[in-house]
Length: 174
Image (cartoon, rainbow, N blue to C red; front, top):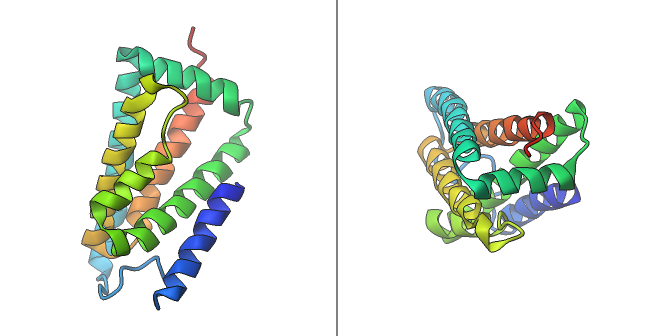
């Protein structure tokens, strides 16, 4: 939780230093309500698509099963309320920092690469998780650039974290 609160605070501080205290909106891009709504729909679709892809990886690749088991061992037991709070804090904190504050300064590819570095697994065999985090960062960043608003990327990120954490909590793999 401290990491995610720190990321959110760092995003706000960095934005204020750049003269853009509101990192939720892309500077110079006043989104229309229709784009914000489209971003929400895209966020829902992207989140569900990423979760589907992660489930497919879980049942097809040993690296994904290893990661599932290691996350289960590291994070659980977590109650449902804790999963909601963790998913919300991580999605808001990471999106504010990586998309809202970092992306306008370093660009889409660099902000996605730095985001992926936060998702390096404990072992070399987890590099596909890091690569998929890079791809998700590109998707979330493109959504932010298109809509000018973080709502869609936060929704997508929340769905990915919430549904995957729930799955890790509910399913014990052998």
